[in-house]
Image 1: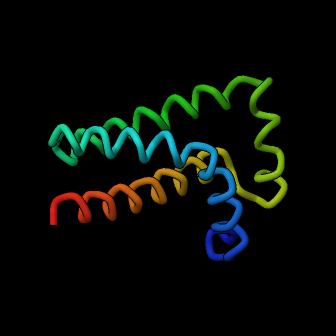
Image 2: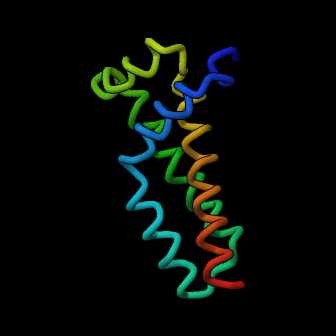
Image 3: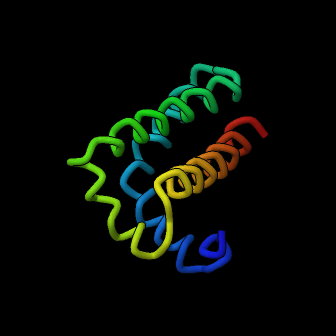
Length: 99
């Protein structure tokens, strides 16, 4: 858990998260336009992260995560922090839309 407290860890997670940022944010905005409850957006994002876990469990795609593993970030840690970033951005968008 030591890499969790380094700034480099968060920069690397954001580097990974940038690849799914646009799609995830657009899906969240689309759901918010249809006035879906925030809990359904969170569930959708959990499913989205679950699909990434399935994708990276294949040996062909797990090679894409070597950079992050060299810095001590596990697959689960990477995807968990990506979900946290995604949730933070969704909360900000939700506040903008409904408050």
